[in-house]
Length: 117
Image 1 (tube, rainbow, N blue to C red):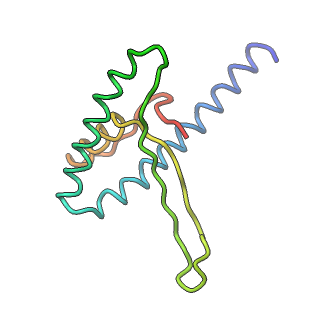
Image 2 (image 1 turned 60 degrees about the horizontal axis):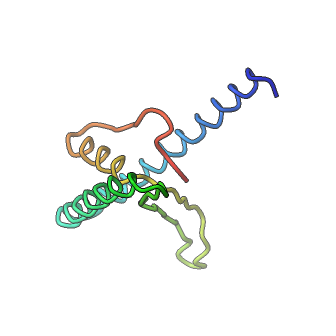
């Protein structure tokens, strides 16, 4: 594979990851908005602690990081069969930035490959 092909493949992969991450964020936004104000506040405080922990973890040689795993499922009421679902991982800082934007009435889409999962 020559460098032009590699670059195209990298761009396709990057675009898929960003689109998936955007979808995960939008799904999380729907879940977040269902929580009470108290639950939202508690979640934001927990995210701040995770983000601070990631600052410390990032200085260690192992490059360890904490992620927030998101997961949702829609099940058939009668059979219990899973009809749809999604799973993803988002960094605490991305979630905090998104939540802050949502609280201001704005949308949030991070640039680049900010998503994992």
